[in-house]
Length: 309
Ligand SMILES: NC(=O)C1=CN([C@@H]2O[C@H](COP(=O)(O)OP(=O)(O)OC[C@H]3O[C@@H](n4cnc5c(N)ncnc54)[C@H](OP(=O)(O)O)[C@@H]3O)[C@@H](O)[C@H]2O)C=CC1
Ligand SMILES: CC(=O)N[C@@H](CCC(=O)OP(=O)(O)O)C(=O)O
Image (cartoon, rainbow, N blue to C red; front, top):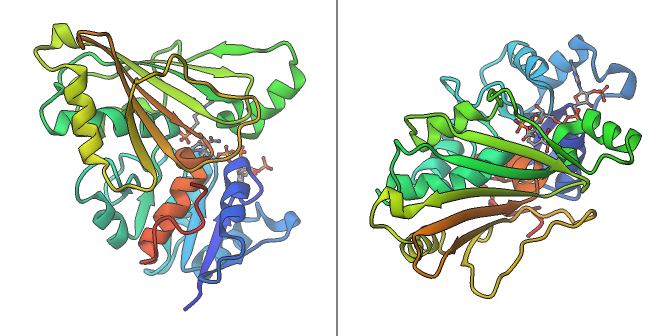
């Protein structure tokens, strides 16, 4: 039976990409509000309560408000914002990162999409910590570059207005909104030192975790590669590879959308210096692709339906 889906924030960067991925899917019918009523709280309340699924593509405060508008016990919610990622009663919407998570999403009423950067961090590190190859009490550092669509309409507009702006390092206050979910879901003792940046590319990101394996202990890069390869074996979304002949990883200014998550394990010849790197589309597996994957799982469908793989 066709399920109704209301995207609250449908004309934002993430909302538009979700609608594209759902277009032509007979399993879902989109509930849409006219432009002049899309921020009207009564119109939103009605659409939310009339729908089987609501996908929140809103700033955090508006996402919190949207949840407060639910007055039934049936509407199921996927929140793309940061508002509920470590909240009680919400399942973390990253099916692959630990055993049992797909089942938790399938049965959940409230699912919170992971942040784009944590998708890379947790995809790389969480399975290795869970299996005892990396320590939970290590002071992890993460460098990252993102396409400017990661900052939504406001950052897209800024890059349009400032044609000389090529690179922006930020997070200088050590309070990035993604820190709590990385710590919580990797089970870390310390916050990650996170150095994010933005480049003049619309979409795409690299998340890069340098590790002195020699200082950690006896584990080496080939073991990390072997473990991650086995953990994600069979996934149509997540791939794992060693450095091989790779000498560079690239993001182009106009890369095509993708819902894939590519993981790379690079190391020096002896394997005691490592860089764990994730490449993904911040609007794909980092946002809209993840939302559609979660919707598929919650609806009991093939989780890759409608994805760009
Ligand atoms: N962009 C990305 O790569 C990622 C984004 N996210 C998260 O997804 C959410 C949406 O982000 P993004 O699409 O980038 O943001 P955008 O700024 O592109 O879009 C947000 C949309 O929400 C609308 N909106 C704001 N307040 C309200 C309200 N009270 N009622 C109804 N609509 C409202 C805005 O309206 P208007 O058009 O009038 O401004 C806008 O269309 C955010 O929480 C973001 O952090 C998560 C992962 C990655
Ligand atoms: C480039 C840029 O500004 N990126 C955003 C994160 C994008 C994202 O993933 O936001 P969510 O937390 O909603 O997932 C930032 O650093 O705040």
